[in-house]
Figure 1: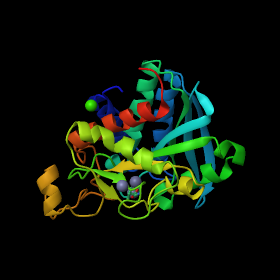
Figure 2: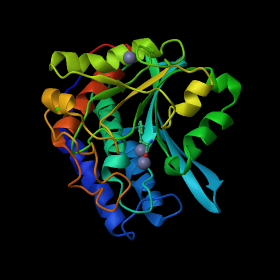
Figure 3: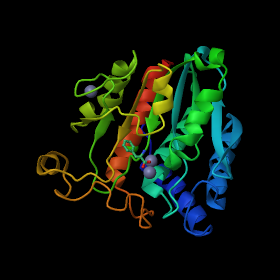
Figure 4: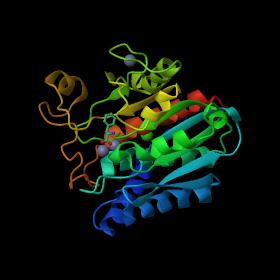
Length: 290
Ligand code: PHE
Ligand code: CA
Ligand code: ZN
Ligand code: ZN
Ligand code: ZN
């Protein structure tokens, strides 16, 4: 799998920050900064040769959007989907939550194109709207797929907050080793998502597989899922600070859902490690050559 240059991921974050700045400091559902974020990501993917579509929905009297991008080729009856939410809260620009997952996924999609990657499974990417209002966009997408289409999605990888400034390294507990696991296939996804961290000797902890992000609607239909996370409002323990570095007793992201979730609210090392781990998982699980 390719090594993802973190500078490329950060360049997308700089664009999302600038979109927020020129649109009242937010990229929230119903605000022009959200639509501009969709247009930015779509423009990059279209230029790279993805088949994109924008799905509209209505929530709280405003129009929301999901961006879906298919990489042509691969077995569509065995589709692997990769996603994250592109909206922020109204309070701030949402650069860690979830510019980080959005930008990492975008750079991985662009790398798929640049390498002319030919996976054996079909690859589809999604950037969801209105997650912050209750997983609205991802729920709309999954609920409105014809059941024959829904059953072709055999796995879903979710990335929401992968660059927290006081970063923890968490994988959704798909195998249920510390709580409720996920649908069949989720254990294998967790294992592959953890693998890159093993090669760089970074310990990974489980985080509850409780549906607190856009994989929720997928697992409700029995679709195998998984994801990575660097922590939100929770505080780092001293044991975690020992093994990961970082500040004990402080939130993983003290700017969570706040105005200060800006370009400076990113841990470059965490963003780099997670981007590489996502790439490893996408390449490994999609089963192509290279
Ligand atoms: N979905 C939460 C948010 O956007 C963040 C989160 C992600 C929490 C993953 C737990 C696990 O605010
Ligand atoms: Ca890297
Ligand atoms: Zn989020
Ligand atoms: Zn959030
Ligand atoms: Zn686990």
